[in-house]
Length: 454
Image 1 (cartoon, rainbow, N blue to C red):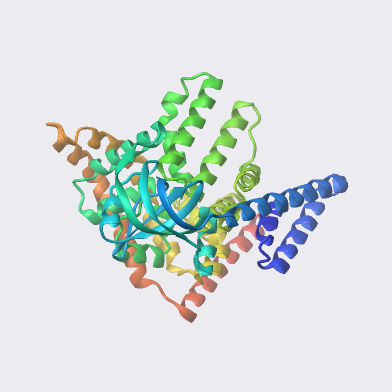
Image 2 (image 1 turned 30 degrees about the vertical axis):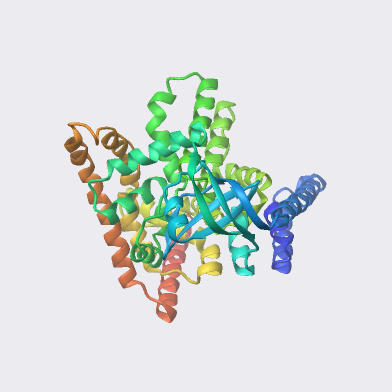
């Protein structure tokens, strides 16, 4: 908490709120560990000082950029994406990241590039507008590159990037029997690749509160480790730890190093390490260690909305899902699902309200209907799509289409729920009233549970 607040306060944004947050955090921690006040204050003070120093270094590095004309090599950082008539991409030029909006022939050539490849470009390096600079700070983007030409020759990426690209192609090939829109949603659910999703689909998922499904998170990481668990259990402890960490790093590269998957992978790595050392740790403590590690290594993550939402959702699950699952009536599986959905929504609420406004209350129902099926798509879709992609150019291609057919039904169900949620979503006072009703229902259940226990 102190490190994040210190990082945000460097830019003098909401300093009063941040200082208040640190003060409240200090008071709370002091009450919890009153017997070691001096040590506690010393630790927090050290973290605040380190946070300011480290974030000041990161912000200063972000502002050091060479501008002007450039001709030479550039490394592709992100997948090319269509934005209107332009191709949007991020290039690394001499160690600095620039966002590019290319048109015409440069657009066509950039659209065929892959992450990690090196290309020849020429153009002008310009400053970002204040709005762009604020929005792109967490991505380490320093300027806008006005591209003039792109060379035909390309140099291949490193082995880890090439292997990640092969996996992404296999997954896409495995779903090639899907209609285009369903295929783009499937890749979004499995590896977070939403670059080809139509605007209508993006709007439906945002308004229905399901946008988190196409952002890779801890659920995706857990499914990957679950799929590999039969193999991992056969390995010795040290080898298992090394292989698990290697898989996590590889999956982060496959999913293009998004803030949410960084949080999930680091958290999974910390949990695996604690178990390997024979000292299992509570989930909330692992989350705290994850935030400290990730913000220290990359202070600019403190400016990422996706990172805040990922941490907030995990915090909500840790604190609320257990108590809510005990008081929600109905079968245990349904109570657990409802509790997890509400807990995650409450956890992400501060970031969502601050950035996007009050979310639609119908999102709770949409999540209850969509999340179980989306989870099955993520769990089964990844290995099945790899299998179908591997045989897509053989005489057994039809077998791949058959095994992917249940996955297609699941993908269509998730999209149908998103479209229905968009149509039923309310705004203004109606939506506010629905949220009041939801909170009143939760408080009523908790109060009734407290009376029963008393």
